[in-house]
Length: 402
Image 1: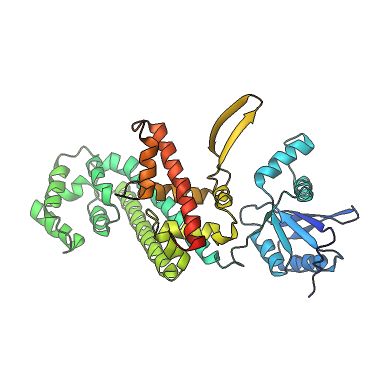
Image 2 (image 1 turned 90 degrees about the vertical axis):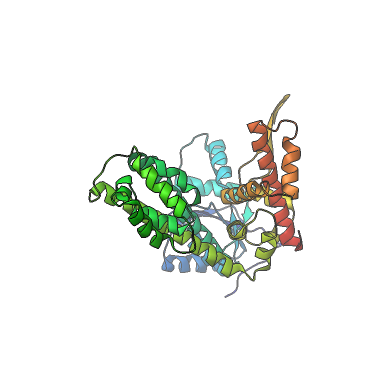
């Protein structure tokens, strides 16, 4: 297979509007003529499309707007064939569509024309394929972790705001250490005051002790819990009722999500324990295994960014100011980048400023020194620390030192 890669001639622009089942393709040849057709999301059509592109006399530049994960199969096929594959921004597409057509009307052929217009103007980005660049497994691990943590949070809110409110509101204060497996085992066995007070104190302590295990000395806690159950305001529900079955079902699922989360954290550490970039990121105060995993999964190889400002822009941690004439708006984060990276650096920054001594905490303290109790100032300080965290992460990966 031979692909024409003569860089001296103008390329043939191939704009693809991605869809779930059929992609709209608009081709503009070097003589100005255009050609449009559809490509089904199937192996047969992908092969025909690839053969068509290889048959063209000039080199091709192909671009599309990323749409969920529907573009991944098509992009992988084109990248493997050696074509120049580009991305166009969703925001740029939306703004350009309104400017060209003076309407918010949207359809697939029109979107392909918008993508072609952006290609001719040179407003594209290099496509970075996770599978081709070796970080697909990391992305899937990070995505699955995100799904599990989100589901776990939903279950926790359901327990606190519904089940505990109805049946055992006094036990909510013990939910400050929900990583403990022994707590969830005890909570599942004794979810209501009635289930505790059905036994005398000695029997309750004996049964609960077997659930807690010998490593944890919780005798005083169990006695306190038994006394609390005696004065609870929870609704008196029968132990064999459907409501209690549903209550225990949610507790079981929450415990299962907690177990899955812990297993994925161990999997991430084991998978990346010999990865030098992972080791360097872990050396940054506040960066744990999951934050390091998210950074590597979402950003790929940070060395592909020529300057830390490019990486900050990719994260959406760059500053943007709206200015028109004599009017100048506030300078704030653009938030036009990767949401998960911003979240990861925000969490790492919050953890770092709670540690004893490091440059991140020092920066935060300098930022809030003049108004330490102002919530807006503290939020801006944390944001500034998150941006610094991203710059440091870029530096330690690119240069290999903190």
